[in-house]
Length: 340
Image (cartoon, rainbow, N blue to C red):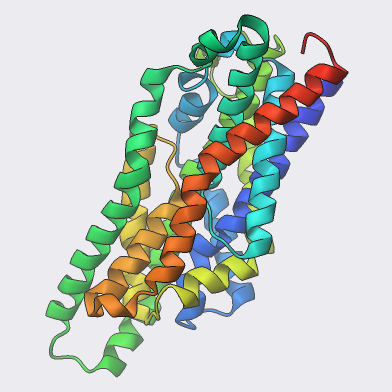
């Protein structure tokens, strides 16, 4: 029971850092366009992160908790190793100002630790028994689909905006879209809470099953788990990862209120689609793709592609690095606790 409490605490700490890193996703554009001050923006985003608690189910949590990793090979120590790996990577990249996928960090660590346990118990030839390979198809597809969809939708929205306001002056457009961006930022924060908080719920539910407190993932996610996950991610968002916010809001491309509105609305649509399908998706990938879509609408050179390449590189490295790190952490745990 003490170990389970430690795991729940570690999962909620990860959830907090998730909100801390992903605060940039929800508020970078609204700060970059000076619609709200930084403190107003984080409070706005945190409120709507938590509001998702009242509106959405737990299908994403079920996918993360049991549809991707074989719970027959999961122990509480496995989950702890995955959480240590993913939380460290999330903290490190936040300190570096790199927006990365908390989803991929968590899933990579969880899978890496499970694979490590199977290797210790049954050997290298059985490593893939740790995974439900069919459960990885949509999450892997959305690695490419979510930023691409964000890019396409934001480009279409920008086209529609300029067509609808072709007789308006830029100043008048800014007046309208400074107001509308409050709505788009709220919608995107809601979508962020609906998808990201559920990933932590899934890991905690998996720990409850592994510890024998809950029979299976089919029993559902306890209400206290749902409430705790939404609270932790909202507090993380309220704390704000300022270096990541600067990268997302200022360094990828320059944004005006109409561009911020298009990026947030497009990204929210993509994330809501994934949540409806029960797919854990990267909100960071999605909003970054949408911001790049806004920049490329004006002209391709408006996007700082070199910085975008650095961000994509961090995304690509997240799965393997967190998986390998979790495997190493689990190996160390096995040395300390034989049979873990």
